[in-house]
Image (cartoon, rainbow, N blue to C red; front, side, top):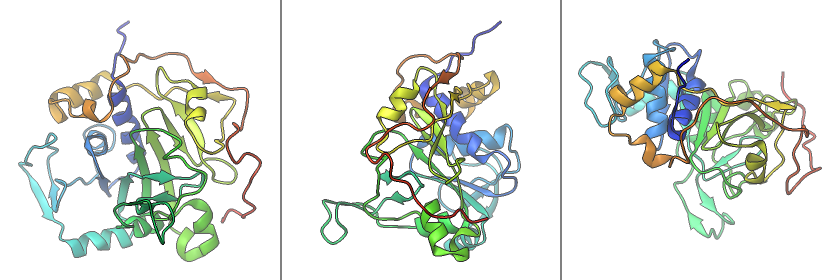
Length: 286
């Protein structure tokens, strides 16, 4: 039997690509780096062929070019007003980054510290409020650490489950946070109160390592599976078609080759954190 060997970056690309599974004919937008762009294009070339992808600016591509390549087939032009129409009508699944994210998926890309006098000024909210309220949204965090996974974000740029519920139907009707992929693990919100749950750990990573690098209590199932490995065909497409220059490896330095192993386990369903015991009393909308 042939053993499939992949780098950590390649595992992360496939984990991000899985966020687009089942989307169908919708614009798949990766923001802020090679991994998310590769993920959308890999999904389109494999298990989600109806996805719409673009060249990173305003051209909808009929083919799927490599990173940095020019599309040979252009299916359409997407000026800013039409891009906004897609966002406001739920026809875009974006994979965002975040400087901070909390246990309910509220994210911050605006400032670090008090809003009135921040220690660091970042991007501003940009399109995060509209994206998170109107469209499927996922996150890619290339460095999993307590500085990013915080008990409370300094400013809410992207709307999480608790704030969407508090805002009422106008916010939670189309609110759809899918998953958070990091260099260590895949997390989702499939828990009774929609707080962040550890869905899988990447090959070579332990549950304890993820818990230790998260600044709030994670929901941890009794058995945590391993993030799936890329297939041989996915690796061929990544290495030979989409990213022959290996830009993915610059974004996620490789700790060593990954191979398929046994699932990680944890005895504690809810791992302790800096605000352990503090629970939200909100009701989850139907």
